[in-house]
Image 1: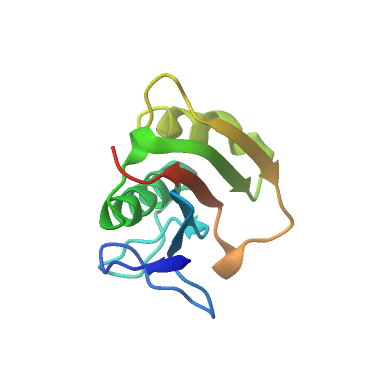
Image 2 (image 1 turned 90 degrees about the vertical axis):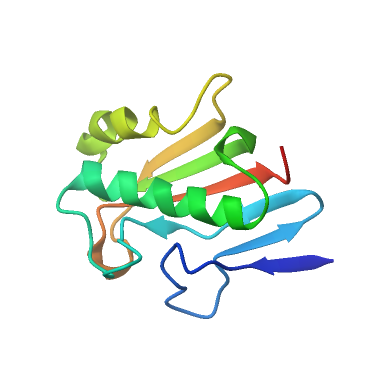
Length: 126
């Protein structure tokens, strides 16, 4: 059985999908862009977008009864792999050891021409 997760503390879905789904003891978030949920505006640069993206992930996990320490896998989509180090600086401030497994890939284009999009898989609960 799956359960939809939604919160107003993160931007709403811009298509036919959920912010996250809980299934089998895991939370699967949709990719989160670097949008401010209050204004709908992007962060001014890749670091601010990464910070907003991860803050949105965090809000969704909290709405699901989980948290960033429960993340087991993250996927980072970058418009430009040259931003890898800048995004890592922000990313590392959201996680503690043991760090989750992670993939980072450069993509041709992201929704709304974002610079970064991040999705995670987390365990349910503390």
